[in-house]
Length: 234
Image (cartoon, rainbow, N blue to C red; front, side):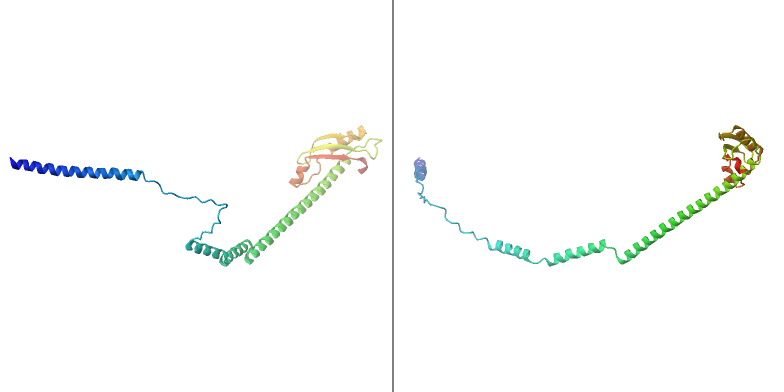
């Protein structure tokens, strides 16, 4: 029984000491907290200036200064390689734009050939025109010759009426067949003497077949003729 009481007393004593220690610690924290909150801030002073002081230039770091100097030196250097490259490119461009001697010779030959071809073509056209003119002249002369033969044959078959003036002229449109036969004869312009006009019309039919050329090309031109018959050419 006594041991049990002794154990309870010892336990109560330890608990009391622990409780006391906790209260002392709590009290200390309260005191320190209040003191910290009531502590006044540090004081400071203010100085007034009439004008702002001159600011001293801030020195840049050594690495920045060195980099800047390197860039300035690079920019100050003569750009000989770049200039040389530009001149080389310009020279190549000029050489490319200007034809070489071989190209100039080739262009000259082409131009001479073009001039020669133009000259030959001009000569060919001129020759063709000359031949055409000769053919037309020959054709016209041949047609004139045959027309004179036809008029002469018609005049020889006219029974001339009296009182016909030498200047009388009757114009007819005569249509011929390929063998020279007269298909039709129409008076286009009277001579002013009806008797002479009728006598000439009768002579046209009487003189058939009329002389025509044997050439097929010329013969086509004699399918239809305009003939003027005058008595003075008889």
